[in-house]
Image (cartoon, rainbow, N blue to C red; front, top):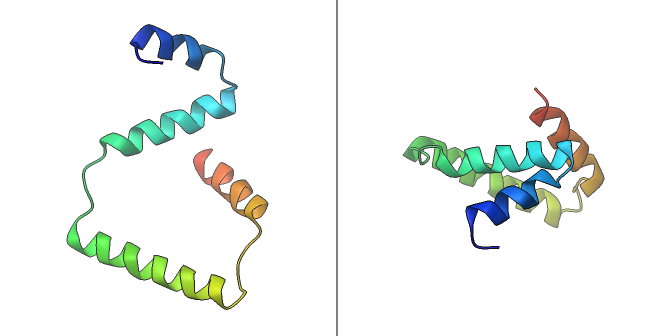
Length: 74
């Protein structure tokens, strides 16, 4: 898929849910870069998540998907 027409055709075949997810992803690609404080906060959060997973405190992926869908719907 390399032309805009091909992409538009493919997008037309997506479900409404997938179109919304694609829209959110595309929006995230054009947002300004994180500032230094935001980047530091994100990295600390990721470090904490890694420690939780290593300690066996993870969350089932389906629960994560449900939460992300609910956040995206807002």
